[in-house]
Image 1 (cartoon, rainbow, N blue to C red):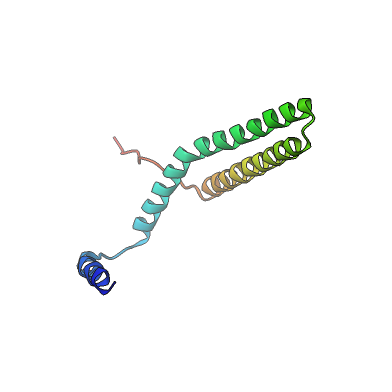
Image 2: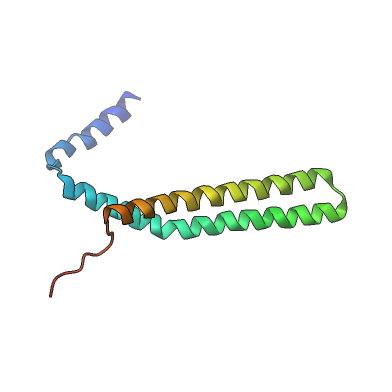
Length: 114
């Protein structure tokens, strides 16, 4: 155990030597990168939430036609959680977009003057 801690400390100890000063533009650049990453993954996550809803819908319909009460409640729960997930994801994405438009933040590759 001590051996692993010593190895980690030796590997991490040079990191303060590479530390640099950080200003507001570095922070905004990092925020822009995070928003770009979110803009890439949000449609994927919304698709997963939509698939979860439709999986619950299919499970609900098949269980209802078979008369399986446990399957009906399971399908209903999947549909509810799918709707909740979609609502949360779209709401957060919308709030971020409203904030970006309100404060005039633009993310992405800056346009160079010609």
